Amino acid sequence: MSAELAEAFVDQAKHHLIQDFLPKVGRCVELLSDEEIWWRANENTNSVGNLILHLCGNVHQWITAGLAQQPDTRQRDLEFAERGPIPGDQLMKKLDQTLNQAVRVLDSLELDTFLRKHHIQVYEVTGLQAIFHVVEHFSYHTGQIICITRMIKNIDLKFYRL
Image 1 (tube, rainbow, N blue to C red):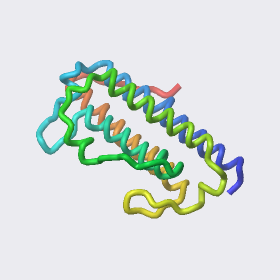
Image 2 (cartoon, helix red, strand yellow):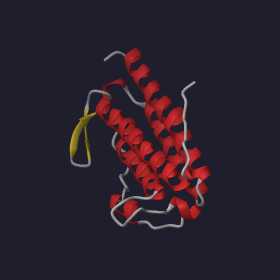
Image 3 (cartoon, rainbow, N blue to C red):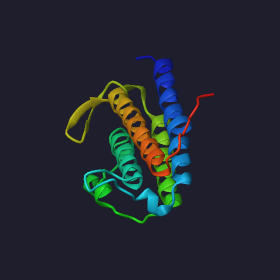
Image 4 (spheres, rainbow, N blue to C red):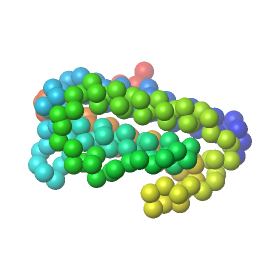
């Protein structure tokens, strides 16, 4: 893999995470009260708050711990067990810090990291697969957060790309 290709891949991943998905999640959190952030349709569904905690855990585990070989402190079950109320601004601060840490890791990766196998959760994945997983996973849950916000607020949220 060439350094140019690796840099382009990382730049695109960072763009999606920081400039596309993060502002969408942030806009949803702005629209919701702290109580609404922790609303669940039923006990078998997740709140916006749970999804944000889950995104933080996933990004940290797959990028910071998985690729930078830092300690994996994730407690995945607690991401879904939390019932709040952690205020929206604190959740967004945690998400922003998690993504900024991940960006620092992505910017510091050695070229061999992209094709080398990494053990993350129960998986053996290349660095490319790990980054791709994080971007796809973040996109999926961003869509869920938008859907929940639309349902709670009974509004049509439109997010346009410039």
